[in-house]
Length: 424
Ligand code: LRH
Ligand code: MN
Ligand code: MN
Image (cartoon, rainbow, N blue to C red):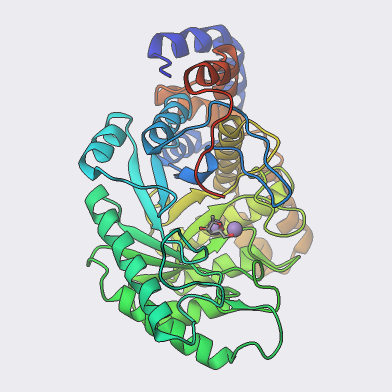
């Protein structure tokens, strides 16, 4: 489904005067508005290939229709998002949910849409048809060396596929753990996992990164072998300088202070990547910013501050990705909302008066510190986000164009009502 530039310009034209008025006001209020616009324009968030179809729960799935039936169609869908918002120029693949049979063709197709390949995700949490050994009792932690070897080889194969596509990172999320006390030895599970990760790490090309993603619970509910940022940090530190911790916002115990975790990992140079989503209870994978937007802002404050302290480039020195999918929304609309929420939180964090905040902290002025943060948080930065998009050739209102052009109906008529995308 193509939406050409003329169409987008047409929609933009209708909304331009209102937008310009709102923008002019903000430009008058924010002395460094141009710098904020530049940074917003550079920021790209990778879309996971598994979020393009309606996610389900174990109680059912209600397809939106017109979902991508193969990797080519997933790339087309992300191409469409990127045309509209100019901030979704990357795709993250999950192997073997995605099967890039002809990497040169897939690479060329992605390039034609202005999309690059973000982190590759391996999968040793499900048994695949024809697989020799089962992951029922874990993969890299497994007591049986043959199971571990199978999981190691899968990860090495994922790296190989990633190299062919031009990806530069591997995300390893393990569901390994236990459901009952006594089921495993924590120490042996850790040691086996470390040994396996080291064998995978040894196969990483020099310029590649490995992201070790942690998660507190699910599908194991007594212990998880990479269960929190401490465990992930331990693995990443022991592995070497190409290994980093990956923070998925939904993977913490309730009320965890994620912004503090982010701050300390950045301080240690061990934060590698992000999976954005939102949640009320557990790993709900809801639309970014839909439940706790203030927390998202506070996380971005630490990201901006921590990256600046290390002279890191915001847009490229961490892996930014959405990891959300669920049952009730059109997945493409949901992704547009998620990217928008990320850019809004980022823009707000860029508005924080850092010098004034540091001064307030130095004199223990708690009230002033809160006022400074909330001054930024309560600024309606949407015109800045829209302007950055406009300057990049995107739509002032990506959702407006998506709905105005009836994109979902078009996809349904081309691909059918009952499509099954691979993935969760
Ligand atoms: C695990 C997880 C991990 C997987 C994805 C499908 O909950 O966040 O990143 O790869 O979901
Ligand atoms: Mn994740
Ligand atoms: Mn998750």
